[in-house]
Image 1 (cartoon, rainbow, N blue to C red):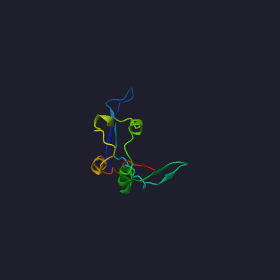
Image 2 (cartoon, rainbow, N blue to C red; image 1 turned 90 degrees about the vertical axis):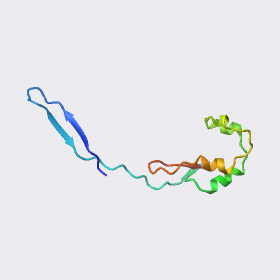
Image 3 (cartoon, helix red, strand yellow; image 1 turned 135 degrees about the vertical axis):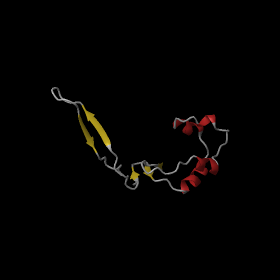
Image 4 (cartoon, rainbow, N blue to C red; image 1 turned 30 degrees about the vertical axis):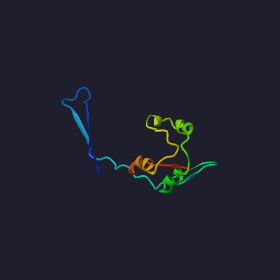
Amino acid sequence: MHRSVHRAVASPPGWVGSVVRSIKFMLDPLTLSPLSTLQGERVILREPRDSDVDDRLRHPIDPEEEDSYGSSWRQEWDGRRYHSREHLTATRCPPDPGTYTWAVE
């Protein structure tokens, strides 16, 4: 898709009237390439998988770890020691083609 962008340019001294130039095109937004897996010495960044929910259900909620993410999660926390499948899947956002979503392993 091309979008039009118009720009008015003031006329130089001595010219009568004004000069208007139009730029009639703009490049389409770039599409992102498929998400790659990035491996570090101790961490892997990868695309989320359905099995991530099952993996998270096996581990208890660690309040200190959750605090380190900087969110206000304690306001909604009811004291449970384990996540529920409903809670973990309800916070998922639909994929946005303009952004990458990483899972940390």
